[in-house]
Image 1 (cartoon, rainbow, N blue to C red):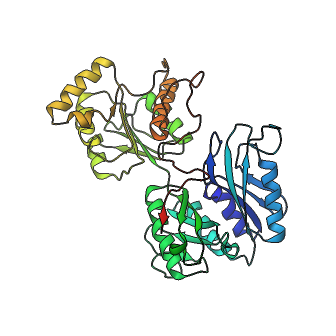
Image 2 (tube, rainbow, N blue to C red):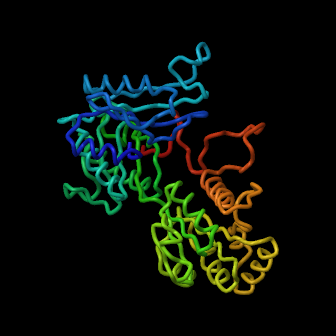
Image 3 (cartoon, rainbow, N blue to C red):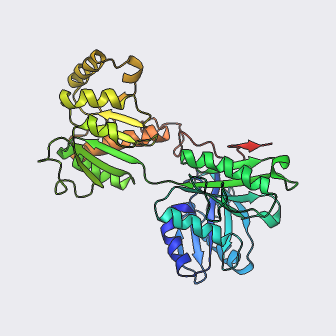
Length: 392
């Protein structure tokens, strides 16, 4: 749901009633991941997608029904061997979809409105909704913020499931861990932990600001990489010590231009486990102090441009300043996948492909003839029957 937060926030601000269908869990070759959503308002306007087209029509009708009767439902869609063009996923996957009405007076509306406001404003937040359990709790929601403060002053969350307060605190604590990691998935809570006499399944959706891409070296290849970085929804910074090259005119799509020695900037800026660092300077006086620091930071990706000769020379220089073999093993150099790239745009595509493969756990090989999943994620363990977490 939070993947279409900007549009849904506008609907809330306009006072519209709507129903939102959210992918809860997937199995097999499903095209969308948990958290993907389709919403339908009272006029029949639809936004978003849950399957890339396979089951959109059926889910649209479920949303219209939820708007009429106010009932939250969980539906499973899968492949039909008898009729591949019937309602189902012709790609062979399975998806579970939660359909929740968000009308004036519905218990979940205030909490979901707060979550949508936070996500649309670029703030980190997570919303937890009951997917399966007692009927009266279906669709109930909690909002969790990184500082643990809800607008009602509760130290852990905003909203409530309407059951035992201990259930709210338990889910808030577990969902906080999802938010810290920027993850979306399901949480299984046993009968004892739920405090409501039945086990529960809770969908936790996290919305965090875009990950950072920091491009060091204001060269033509950097300009192309900035464009593809923005396309992939990174917050892109270009850093170069040379003011004549590091200009907004040369990099109009960059979110930030920094004129500073690269390693000095990296020392003072914030990075996290989703940050990618692309070193395109291929000049030892910039590269060595920068990479010496970068390879010791808890970032997602460190890549450096240069020929194989440059790569070998740079590695020796890094060893001389104390970089270990284990740290060197983190360096993607020469940067990018083997696409035969020559132009700046092709090279940027090569680099971006390696970043995506590294993030998702892809092999980088051609899918033709390869017996490997098409859709997968290095950190995803969510399936229609899987358990990401549990509380007994």
